[in-house]
Image (tube, rainbow, N blue to C red):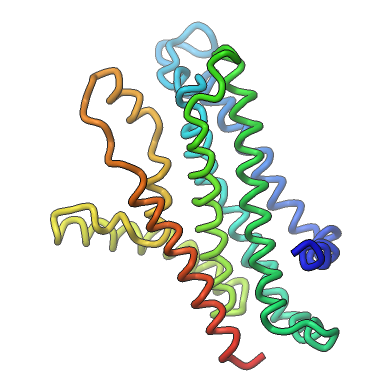
Length: 265
């Protein structure tokens, strides 16, 4: 794994798009949370003069799902990066050069999955850093780690998105088409189909669609906080969504593997 990642890193370290898209994620995640924690959602004023309805979700009790929820939006930048990095291999024929240099198709494929896995790990680590930084502004370190198991949900969600982006890239091989389809599916098609299924069957079956299953792991955090305050019924358990997300990641892997083995190089 280390050797495959080392070779991939040599391709990306001087690639401007790599740094631009990762930079967007690195900068926007804490900047957005800073706006929320300080003034973006204040009532009757700004800064310290208003009442911030979301400030409490930055305690260690809620910070992981809170920062994780916003990270689930900004992972779009890294998903686009995965698409560009993969489709570039086909556009510039470097996939064939890898085979000429001695790689097998599976080594090429696993190198891309190792990149997706590494990005998911780094995404989770960064959410942890941002979460600790914001929690310490409103809470005591004695309350650490809180519900830190939610960080694993961040990892699963990230890998789900990156794996899905990788699968689309292997099927369509053109960055523009793949990015367009990724946004069309993730932002419009899946939402509509999910709601239609839920309406037709009268249950939450539509929530188990590929990306929606992971999104359900990290719902909008203020909803859980309000339910806790109002002593309403707890949200549905996350375990089924976690299992569904892991199953979908496995499907991406095996579907992409079959596509690569059977298609022209």
